[in-house]
Length: 450
Ligand SMILES: Cc1ncc(COP(=O)(O)O)c(C=O)c1O
Picture 1: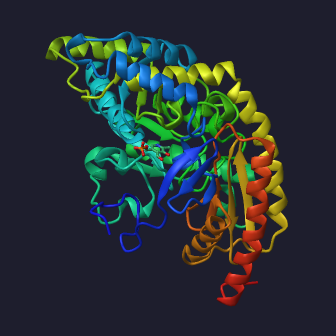
Picture 2 (picture 1 turned 90 degrees about the vertical axis):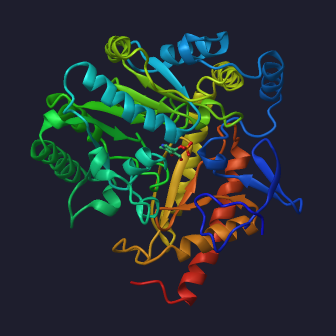
Picture 3 (picture 1 turned 180 degrees about the vertical axis):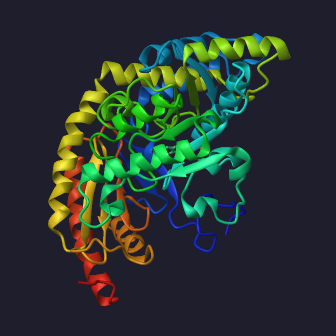
């Protein structure tokens, strides 16, 4: 065993697969075996592996300026160009952009900016943040407290109270509905709960509500129609900011430029980007805030002498150049439209699994989806642990497909945006075989009910 402490891993089961190289939508292990990367790595390798133009950009930009920082007002053309482009693209009012290195630090930055901003406008008591059950917003101390998945919270003693973290319902109708509640009734109940939480806590104490437009790690939850409309009406009523965590949904994943546009979220006040921003060719994240929020923090920084937040690698020139090239390719190759077309194809193919005895729900939007495996198809009862999903993932791997088991027993599918129809056919064919094998396994283990 190596000396690595593996991230997000059961530390008794490390080095399960050693990947050596990648090309297009495929990766190859150290035995030379090929796998279709059905998860785009960690929802990030949108333009696939070994992209010649991106490799050239990284190389050229390293040769030109391998590093320059942005502290004390220093700048460079790559960061300026990328920030302008992101501000143009984002569905926000005059967005200003802060650069970081990961989705988690982008969210941490936002927590700090919220405090800085509300202190600046004379509302220091407005500091609590509402997150949702099952949310995933990263793992740093503060962003990790916004995450609601037990595995990311247990034993880490996250400072939830100190940070003023409040949790409200997740918007998953299939697992969250009560009795024969309709979707509309479900939406009404959980948004009524949101409003009650705000009133109970005091709207003057709540800064923002954070949401992934469609979730990832929590099982690809696509909220029912009308959910965001109701949420935004409540937030507007109580003067609470909408913070869109678009670390997964940004840049075409849902078949539109941003998840907010795909899900009918009007003008968020803050947005977090990472992953597909650079197609994972170089680590970079961006935290965007409204222009008038920026104006307020400018005044505040004048008093202190500096906006005292920033990383050594904020606006790394190679990362910024790479991200700009990625955005250029998205536009030139009409990747968001491609994702919409291929997304429709993927969703319609996956929907055929709904009749399988092991499948409770198939959900998704654009090029991200999940197939939820359940113990009891007629009631939707879940398995008591993640053994069945883990088995399915291992079988996929055996057949040359990488997927991920999330939120218990949901098989997540999130291929690079460059997939074509035959890649999707390959994914679906392997999954069909694996569903049968997994059903047999679950049956043999007496795990099937009903
Ligand atoms: C929605 C969302 N936010 C934040 C993060 C954290 O990003 P990172 O792993 O780059 O810190 C992730 C990572 O998967 C994510 O899915």
